[in-house]
Length: 154
Length: 367
Image (cartoon, each protein chain N blue to C red):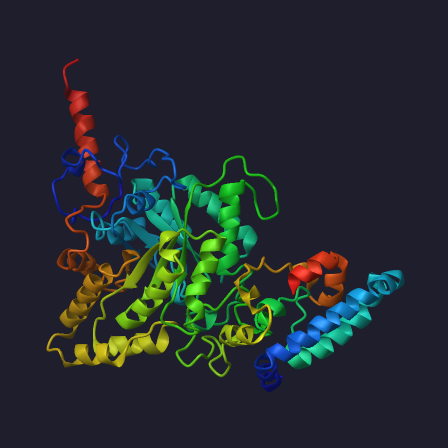
């Protein structure tokens, strides 16, 4: 939902703090989750993730979450799917070049990043999207990649 | 050489090489060949030579024809001959369909022009783009400009599927990986990496203003070596941007070429402001052109004054002239602004004439 998405960016400090706690919990549960099996958990976890992040961020389930580096403004809502910063077409009033009724995802991202701890992750150069991961849980992706990679993400 | 199309419209002595033994931007024998490799240079093209030699560079944008006739490309290029250090071949700019940048570059390199091949992420995925980069380097393209690309909605095919597989940053990084690590994004090795001078765009005149210099820093970290900006009509905004750029030391890590162009009339300026994404033209500029008795002339004068002022801004290494539908004014604008300070960029047609003269002499000389 667009209004809720804007609210989430306005509260990027709070929400990123909540997520940091959630990620610690996930990591703590990791031995148990691994015993159940990531593959078996994939469908229900992905469904929950789709629901929660879809509501808060209009998450598109790219499966490789970059919210921590984009001020909690989901870059997949950018019509050009830009994951590294705004294009040159942003309107003077901060609206999107392609969708004039939508705030530019990266104008939002910059503001969100200033409100959250670790917001300077916006300076990290993001790799191109791996299109095999669409629809998969990024939460489990963090666990699959290992705890060290998880810290680097957030 | 065949098919150079236009008559010789450049300036100067026919054989500039004869009067310039110290030429930094031309090969001595074959005018079409890439320059010899130089230490500290990543390409064999003229633009990088000129910039690294500390000269103030001038590039211009060639609008590609809606045609399969090569002479149309050569005609358009010949207008810039001897006035610019590189010619940008646009890649479906404004999301409108024209001859491809790869095609234009193939024609230009064939006769020895120095193109900047623009690559937009809008129309091709990473497989197509990396293939084009190899092909371009093989044809002798020395420079690429990595762009996100305008959205399909603003062009003549709004029904088209927008690709955007890469973004401008990951495109820069991909090409740098190919060049410096000699491999594709997949990791598969290249037997000969492309020798390219990597460029990117920046728009200091669009929000979020605070992030723009940092985004430039990000592009430099990804591998950008030169920047061509969006049209500048707002000098104070450019100065604010450049102050921040200098504070961050970015002007020492990449060459910044500021985009400029003449406005044909107040009406055209309003149309551009409304319809071309990312172009910011202050009201004062439009009013000044509107009040002038000859609007086209006034548009040129505004452009020339801007060039003179931009040249004085510390950290600016050159200008990029985008004279859409006014290409014939490019030489006049460059000359009247004195931006080259008497320097004469490589003149392809004159070099070929001199080359053929030398060859004819060699053939007729007694053994």
